Every structure is written in C-alpha cells, then in structure tokens.
Image (cartoon, rainbow, N blue to C red; front, side):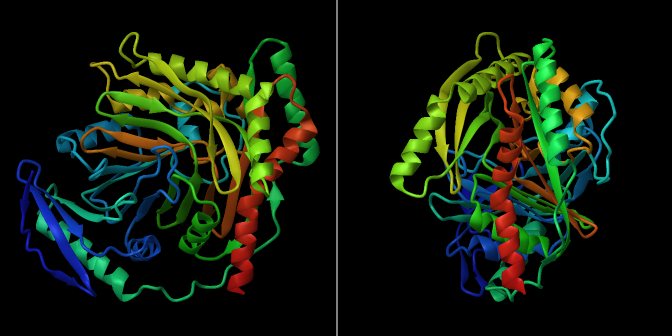
Length: 469
C-alpha cells in the first residue's frame, strides 16, 4: 500500500481529499476525506441508492462500535446459502488492511430460520413474511467512518469495473449528501393498533410448557419470544434514524431491499473474526437504567448478584464454548469477562466474552455454521431448544434473532445478534421481544419482561408518528 495523489481534489461542497492510498495488487483505492459529513447525512445519501446498507455504531462500548460502514449498489447478490456465498467471494480474496477492519465484501443477514438449513427441525410455525433466509450483497465501494478519530474513508476496488469508476460513484454519493443535508422533513408517519401474535394467556402457557420440558430433562433453558405488528405508513430510513437516536447501540443496521426494510439497534455481538482470532459475546441478564446515579448503581448491583441471571449466562457461555470448539484450534477456547456489565442508554446488560483461535483447516463460513444461531437467543441444548421454539411460537422469527454483518474480501467478519430488530414490509411493521425461560421463571414476570423490553422501541415509534403529524 502506498500513499498517492489518486487525483486528489476538492470534490465539491467543501469536501476535500486529505490523503489517498493505492494498492496495486488488489486494485484498491482509499481516500481520506478532510471534512466528513455527519452520520445521518451519509445515511440519507447512501439510502437513496440501490440496495443500500448501514452497519452503524451509534454507541461504542468496550472496543465495540468504533466504526460505521455505508454502501450501496452491490455488483452481485447472493440469496442462497453460505456455501454459495463462499464460492462467489473466493475469487476476490485479498489481504487485510492494517487500520480499517472492513474495506469491502459481503454485507447482509442470516435469518434465524437459516438454522433449519443447518439442523433438521420441525416446520410448525407460520412463515407470514416471505423473506429470504439469507441475503448478502457484494460491495466493491464503501464509506468507512472511524468514530475514534472522526475520519471518513472512501474505499473502491477494481474488481468488476475500474476502481476509478467505483470511486467516482462514491464521490457522487458524497456530493449528493452534502448538497441535500440537512435533508427535508420526512414524510408523515402513521401507525395502526399494535397486535401480538400471542395473548398474555398464550404466552404464559408457553412459559409453563417450557418449564415442563425442563422438569422432564429435555432442556435447561429456552429463549421464548412474541411478536408485535401494526399497519405502518412511513419511511424506513426515518424510522431507523429515530431509533438510533433514542436507543444507540454498537451493532445498529439498516437495509433497504426494495420491497422491504430491515432495521436493527442491537447491542449484542454474535461473532467477530480477525485473522485467526474468533470472539463471541453473549448477553444474558438485563435491568433498566436507573433514574438517578444511585438507582443505576443499585440496579447494576442487583443484576450482578442475581443467581438466575448468572446461571443463565453460564449455561450459554458453556454452549458457546462447545460451538467454538467445533472450529477452533485444540485448547484455544477460553472465557474472559464473565458477568461483565455493559451500560446502554436504557438498559444494563450482563455479558461474557468467549474467544478462540480458528483451526487452520476452517474458515469464516465454517465458524458461522458452527455457531449459528447464537445460543443466547435459542437456549440450551441448542437443537432441542430450537425444536421447542418452533412448537411454541406461532410465527417464524425471520431476521429477528438471526445475525446481521459483513464478511470482508480478506475473510474477516463481524456479526450481531439481530435483537431489537424490525421488519417493514407491505405496509406492516413488526418487531419481536423475548427472554430466557428457566425452571424458576414466573410466567407473568416473563410476560411483563417482554413488554418492558418492547417499551423503548414503541415509545420511539409513537414519538415519530406524533412529531410527523
């Protein structure tokens, strides 16, 4: 990689190139922008293009959320399987960049229901969304924002067309961002009444069913969820912008697939691969933020002292250790930061870090298949928990509890657990909330916990509808 001119110039609207790098071997150009635009301006500009994505870190937390990535106009789309994605990506393999963790590659999601491609599961729940189990676009041009330094990088590859042409497209998007920022007010948003796919009585009965499975020795823990849906008239991009302001998180995401939009403000990492290093960070245990510093500390202490929450997290950590062990170098799996607390705008979470070194005969696709779906949103043992979920939840989860993220051309990757995620399709908006059920779970308390978890999303949506009126 060498510094070069790259035709450095004023790109218009006060946006100037500060520095440029060229990698002749991979035909990659990187331009550092001297005075970058704000995140929401970038969202607006990229969001007008074909198949845009944002992998958006609105809140950094312990090394998570240092970068945000923006892209549009993929040169290829894969909606089949991880094996197909591996084959499509293979010709574009390249070395990692020393500073920027993602410089282009495949960006998309695995739905929770992709898990039935990996395990033989019953088919009981209704699939009433009709979305692909997997969708990835291959992006040869992206923008990368370093939140620590405030620097913005435009990154272009000469894969299917010359890197100069890709860079010109990115400059054009940036100029459009600058010309139209701040954007004009969003179209008015309207919503209908919320309906749940389970009544209070049905959810509580499902909790009792899980407790019966636990009593019979079938399973130790099951993550049970329910879905809220309403008619919605509004712009998905504006909805995502409102959610990221009201509920910032290190693993936010927005996709516009043309016929539907996927929105996520997740705090949870599913998998990070950097070189041969693997990491997953399950969450188990949640408390609301306190109204005063004293109340906040008391709630944090209560969470850390909760035997139920500690037991749930330990079960999932053991599950993740076993899953990582399927693809890890022997003896390399280890646990760090067990029962660590992470503070977010509205909640406190209890987490752990499980790390390993990827075996030399395995790749990122093997790692995804070994760990997917994440244990924190299934239960333990995983396969039996997934069978019970399929029997008790009336509708398929879709992208909820799947994973959203990227696989770079260099083979590195980072994915979230797609909790706090919404689907907007055919004028219907839905989101799903759940929690871990164990033997001493109380049905009414578990039901109320789902409503508490839903509150932040609902309040943001209601506020957006009011302010747009």
